[in-house]
Image (cartoon, rainbow, N blue to C red; front, side, top):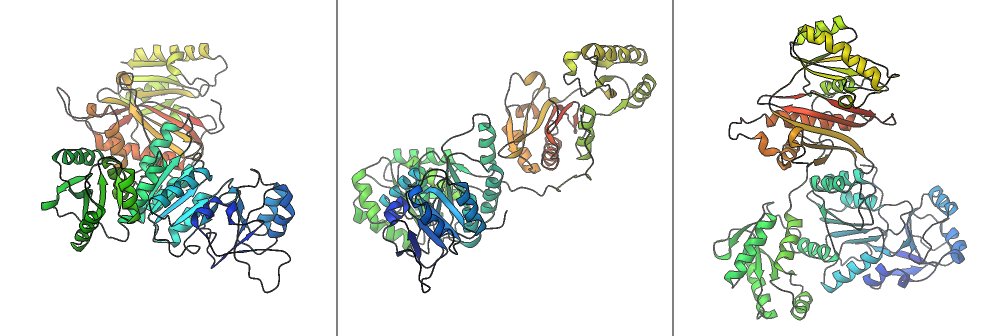
Length: 598
């Protein structure tokens, strides 16, 4: 991760200029804070904290803002009434003086040092302010407090990821990081943060307000791969924060198990159904050994009876979370006022607990894990042959082949490899070899090879008279097993992304693709293979042996390392990869350099 920036608002007091805290909606919800107002000229006895809230309205307050930017500040929070764009000269002045800006159009922040009584363990980091303000109002209604709340506004030069990274490194009490983003811009850094958070036992969630229609599948797959929960509304954020707060500072086993208590057999069935949905194991209260008890309230339960039950549960050394089959605004308000850990709706309750007990994501393996060759230059206009040289260098098995530059060389190569063989003309100008008919398959002997050699070169000249021929590839014919495809491409947000799917005749029947951000290990590759709709074709079946899934997973993991390490490649499509009873073999590949001709 990058060098961790300090957080704004860490001082003993805060200072405001150009207005009062009513200009910041986050501060309004937080209540009266010990703010003092800054006025010019500044006396020599005045102490300037590292964070200043500027509540000016816009251009008419520019001179006042310019004065503030000359102060020895670390952070300036530029309020929601300022225009959307901060003039470049002001940005340059702030950067020159080492001042980081939140905003313009920030709705404010609060951190534990500004509110020492905060008991929450959730950090809210929002691009804008409207949803954050609504979220904080919902927190207030439920009697839950986040530990941090940041409205970044226009994000001039201090981002949600920088703030989250600083919290992660300096505050062990924050367990739940919630990002409210208009879109995911720093995808790779975001995955790095989620991985670091998971290693510390923390949970990352994101509420995305918009998705790129071009990278939606890759975005969804990458976030799932790294254990990032995608939230859909404010209600899920508050439910999750309440669940984390109810289970705060308790060493729970990371097993998805819990006991439950209900007076209805039908509610028991409903509990089991929802538990199965999120992978929880349920135990009846009487025989339960789990340290967590979910108590399902009925419509007749009084507040006194709920409080008595909660005390009994705590005395037994257990944790408790209360829920109900339906929502009831009147009874909910009483429970919230009494600070009972209550999440209305059985489905909502299990979804919130899933945030706490969800397993950690895969962590990036070191790029050097496995074969990692010494860097060698890639041909300016690479062909299939160059792609296979690269694949071999990373330990990915490739069918036996040799690049020949004359008929005698081709005959010698075929004798060495053994008939039958395939011939392919290698030219960077002929990308679609099948359509150009510059491939000869199942060449059985020397006579057929002599005829096929001249014929394929002639077809290459017809397909593109100016094409530069780099040779004819003589390759063994591969039969048996099933055909698969591995593709690497660069995503503008997440960097290298690997997709795999079934290929050949089954590719049209099962047009699925399983995606992961690269690199990943063999365990993650196994999970990808099992997610594919073509997975049953690798298993033993009627008149079919089990194929070498382990070798396929190893090749897929090695391919992800190649994708991560080889920065010059824009796209590499390996199709087909034959998965056999023993081992795998790459037969064909297409490669494209970054910035190269498509």
